Image (cartoon, rainbow, N blue to C red; front, side, top):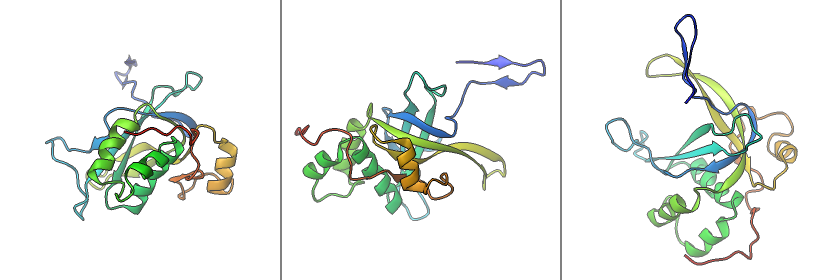
Length: 193
């Protein structure tokens, strides 16, 4: 870990976030329910649990290589379910999941148990955008890198930008997968669990 102390005593801890733009992301081990410092599962005001996915930039040519981003999704969120399904599509796993879980929703226990072991080490292209928001809890401003768009590894970044944002940058309309039905691996790679 990098730590540099300046003459004023300020420290740069080495914790960096991905810069704005497209990166190659790898899903990391440890997909699971988000817990607070007391170990309790985090839930929204509707009682839905929150899932945490950690992605890291995985490209030796990218100056952000090794930086990570946490993506949080709630079980009762249509957007959350669409995000997980589109990640499965972008990694080529959606067909296998649809075949093996024809009557299940994405956040059902058997599906998420398989997501936790299938997504780690899989790659997608993802676009990040740093945003600063004010915390309702302590009133401080925090800057976070948000995953605003993603698609398969064989996706062209300029085409995904045009398709998702009309070539106008991400704005607030992000969080969509490029051609969610497209899979990055050949459909012939079918295997049973």
